Amino acid sequence: MVAGSYSPQTLMIRKLESIFPLSEEEKQALQGVPIQATTFKVDQDIVRIGDRPSQCCLLLEGYTCVYKLTSEGKRQIMAVHVPGDIPDLQSLHLKVLDASVATMSPCTLGFIQHEDLRQICERYPRLTAALWRETLVDASIFREWLLNIGRREAYTRMAHLLCEFLTRLKAVGVAQDGTFDLPLTQAELSDCTGTSTVHVNRVLQALRADGLIQTKGTRVTVPDWETLKEVGEFEPLYLHLEKDEFA
Amino acid sequence: MSLTLQPVRVNTGFEEEGVLVFDERQRLVAVLVHLADRHEVAPGQWFLEAGFGPLDSLSHPAFADLDVARNWISRHLARQAVRGAAIS
Image 1 (cartoon, helix red, strand yellow):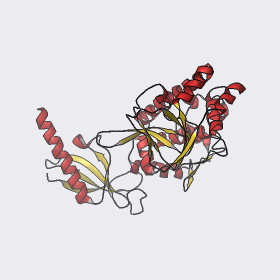
Image 2 (cartoon, one colour):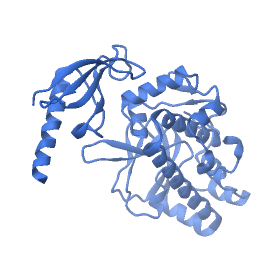
Image 3 (spheres, each protein chain N blue to C red):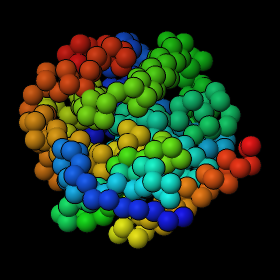
Image 4 (tube, each protein chain N blue to C red):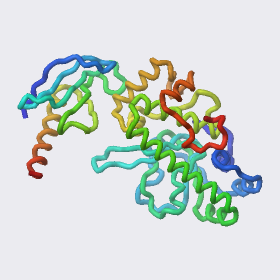
């Protein structure tokens, strides 16, 4: 999944604008934020639980996840992030990370010093509000995932997850139509949905057989969005997107 | 712990060949399903479709063959027996 030819700053602006209206002056200010881009291989930790980072990472390309492990080493993925997201934005205010962030595909990440974010927030209080809203939307997504994992059937759970991915990718312009790149393994989808890999495999087969998804390599196509939404009980309200067109 | 296996057909919507697993008191403790040889995730393996009592709410592993499955189930039942004894 490539975020196109956007500069890191432009991608951050697109993401924030998808949930918060920004003025030209505020966008100009964000264009001036220094961002250090670094590439990561697949399955690498970017930050770990217990870390005390002095910078945040902006996802520029690829997928990352937020996860925690049980004492036996079983992993639960709590969130998946897409380009434009800042998966560890909370570290700006919480000193110690309470979860780890890892790549789920080869990724490019842009590192932003906390100090630079603090300065821009002091000068532009509405940007503070925009970043605050981003963390609130993150929390809303966690709540939806809790419902998804705790109470929905495996088939509905997967349909919901796919609806969320497509909607979020469209909101930042990374997916234009009903096709997107999903380079996640079935084991990772199992960690996202709290089901076994065998169940994930069955559910994907069933979704394909029912004509709700088509897959070719890592490309997923949704031929009938309305039905997938219905099957996945997907109501995009929890994403708090500014424009209804993405949902 | 000696376990008894009994063939059964299971309506999973996918593979149907399975076995019921009984403990030494002839109580049903697990249902295993034999995954297809062309299965994408665990080809030809035996999947813990359902577990009861001590095997309930565990994750659902797949085993290379029935002997591996038997050992795993025995170990978990034995561990649970020890825990139960410690509490009472």
